[in-house]
Amino acid sequence: MKYEVIPKKVLVTGGAGFIGSNLIDALLENENKVVCLDNFATGKIENLKDAQKNPNFTLIKGDIRDRDTCMKAVEGCDYVLHQAALGSVPRSIADPITSTEVNIVGFVNMLFAAKEAGVKRFVYAASSSTYGDHKDLPKVEHVIGNSLSPYAITKYVDELFAKNFSDIYGIETVGLRYFNVFGRRQDPNGAYAAVIPKFVSNLLKHESPLINGDGKNSRDFTYIDNVIQANLLAAAVPSNEFKDRLKQYQKIVSDVPEVNTEASISEVFNVAYGESVSLNELGKVLKQELSEYDKAIATIEFKYGPNRPGDVSHSLASIKKGQTILGYFPKYSFRTGLKNACFWYWENFK
Image: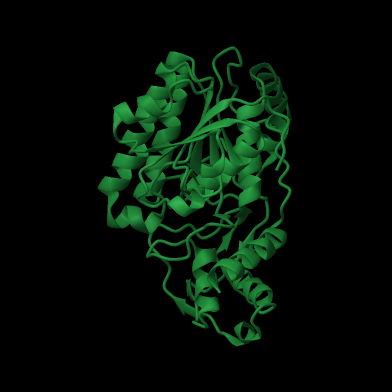
């Protein structure tokens, strides 16, 4: 995935994870120097097997909860792509303390280290869970509801810290609210696996996947290459262009609160495809795609269970702000992305 960006030194936290490792591959392809920081609590060393062959890659094993480690990792870096976090709503409900330590304390450690090192721009993984119980669709960045889980609270607090650091210290911050990202390297195992890899794993084992609820709940599923695209654009848009496009967006969308474009950049963007898919439809399409490799999968039935605490019923993003300011026009639809993902899972987990 080629982008016309001047090669820089970039720190990717959580770089051994699903999203982080894919970002690292794209950054190296674009001839950047890349530092990866990961404690391997959820990341995997095998995700970095190609990166480790590249002389422009450096791996630091460490934890973002340790401030000295953060300071070391960010030395000489132009940009930070902060992906390190403990994801999963159910995980945060089961253990809110650890989620808070990693997602808030670790985030502030990393943000502070980036500020001290003179990093140009701090791009971080935010979350669609921030919209909480707000029912309007599609979701627009400036309107949120009440948080429904500890995880959602931690990700919203990160946005508040990012804005505060921009206002006080002048570091540019860009939050990317991911909507149900899926694709290659997403772990299908474990109690907190995301819905697509979990369903795929079940179907490949000829097991009936469990849908929480009646299957009418919907999500804006977002293929990994769209997320890579958004991150690289968020880092690459020059400050003056960013601010000019922000003024344009404020004119286009009448109810957006006015932002002082003379101040340091601190904005959040939805990263999605802009299409809502029900869990029932997801199950149907997965069976179609995977039965191309194993015809028996077409006959597997889904099971249904109760809704999970903390889950939102429906999720659909407006991506107008990202289109206007970042130039983010996602290249992969849900169906195209799912076809690619199913092929990857078949090749790696059959």
